[in-house]
Image (cartoon, rainbow, N blue to C red; front, side, top):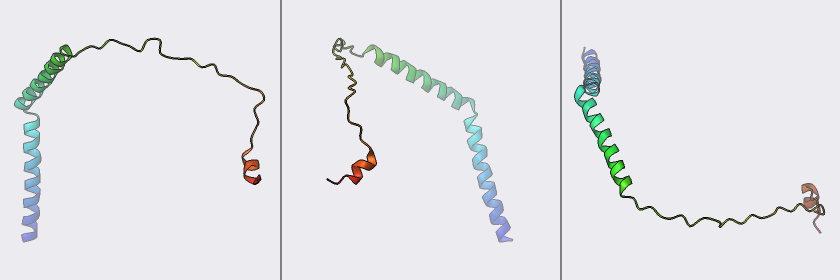
Length: 87
């Protein structure tokens, strides 16, 4: 008997927890607070973006292009020959 009551009590507590959580989550108060927080964050982003300092770009014409040379006189190495060659 005690085991069944204990099981029923656990089940009751879990179900009440889920019920109250879902009730608050889908309530109008929670939705209103959520949208208000989104609007506040958007306003802060806009405010901070206006206060940013813009720096001039000093990275123009700093790249150097290297010409790739393909020499035909390259020595071809084979991996196994390098291991076997212990000279």
